[in-house]
Image (cartoon, rainbow, N blue to C red; front, side, top):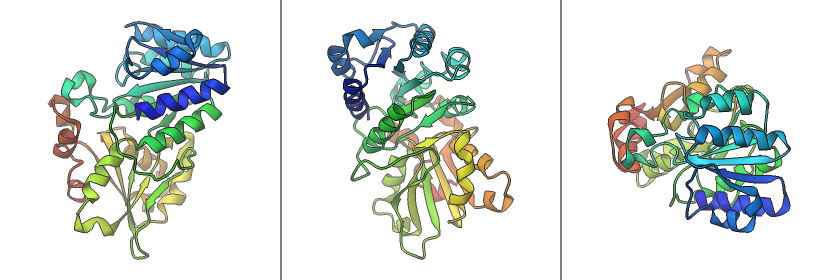
Length: 301
């Protein structure tokens, strides 16, 4: 995902001289193509993430579209006040790029577990969440964000994620993407966001219950996109939201809030998310996901 991000950013910056990249003294081995090609639009703010976010807001106020890049917890929780007051309040085109969403850095422990970031970012009134599930969705989200500068949160995995889509999909806020329709008798679907898509695919491999579920993803969502959800949920008897995030205040909660005006639809939705015990665990991403609710998905909901 990181490679897809930087390739899209470099391509966009070659056309748009208002695109800027700011990092918090990391991203080495990833950001060099941008820094080399556009040195005057690359800033290393050092290990000072709050300053990095205010710097980004200042650049954005002067007409730049700023991409502020760091490991997931650092440009979010450490910068919560700056995001709220400097970026979101002033409706500035800053894209907060969080690498290592979910448990991608699970072997570094709780300080690097990004499992509460949706909860924080989705309550910012103007914030658009971009949570791509594979490198193709990264490219699609990047193209949307570049064409629609706004306060946004781009949540990436780390590296090595498989391409699930055969080509770059067409994305827009609130729009479900279909990966597998199933046959005409299928009335249940998984709806994943972010890297949780990989957990759905892992479960689907050689599992006899796979044919009981269609598969959709939702890469772009926000407060404003809630209005679209009832129309899409109505097409299914059962929707299982899947996220590599704690259940409280995450993607599934966002979906239930979207259906608050129609109780008949709420009963169709089940949530598959990470158990809070993961906060005290250290290990590989796949191992932690499987042990904390994203292994046998139908059994975990």
